[in-house]
Length: 215
Image 1 (spheres, rainbow, N blue to C red):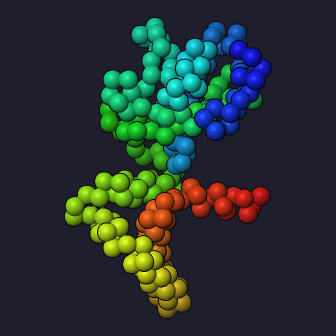
Image 2 (cartoon, rainbow, N blue to C red):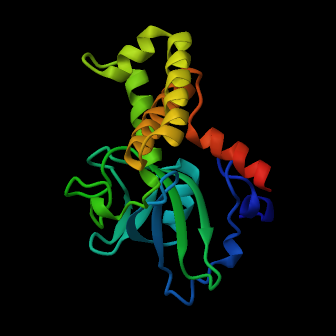
């Protein structure tokens, strides 16, 4: 592999310098921690050899070396619940990989989001999950869904709802109790997510803007 190939961007995401990985130290297998790229939830732990890492980078589907099957194994190859790789980083000792991925379906074979159970999601990670759910509603438009009704009503009506919820949140902050404020703020955040999705954006786009401002 050429030096250029070692450091080039993979699908537009962060580069991985393969020279950083100490394959000899780990007998050719390095643990790979898979983390949800938006929520930060730890999804699973697997092992990669050089070939599994290379295939992950070229296919964008997270692939491991299965120690039980003694072969390469692409997550979701039978269930269809693949992990789409977003970026890969190596730790400071060169013996562990951190894979950020977008899961399509549950990661665990038992049906949970994570192989560590559904209760390990970071508190703010639910916002990313809600954002993804709203986007799925926009794509599928299921009947009897309030979110579907909002999308059918059009951007102007959704914007009006955001305005109404913003006013109610402001009023609750000065004239009502803590629980009322939290309830109104929750309504505001939900309708704002719907508005962003109606315009083709998501919370990640807002986070990018805030990150740049902070920087």
